[in-house]
Amino acid sequence: MVQKRIDKATKPFTMNSISRLVALQADIARFGPSLEDVEACIKVLNEGLLQFRTEKEAVAKTDGRMLNYMFD
Image (cartoon, rainbow, N blue to C red):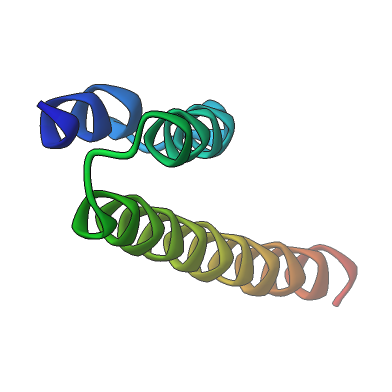
């Protein structure tokens, strides 16, 4: 049940997924299914945030190269 909610909140992973996962973690903590469910949310959240950071760094490098090309 919880894994389905995690998948629904994060497929595809967007900035809204972060708030959905945080809300899901709060629901899990309040209603207490299991610690594994909370850990699953945290794992998906961490993976998603790492993905965003990696994409942001890639875009920044690409933008920098484009600026260098434009002004050379």
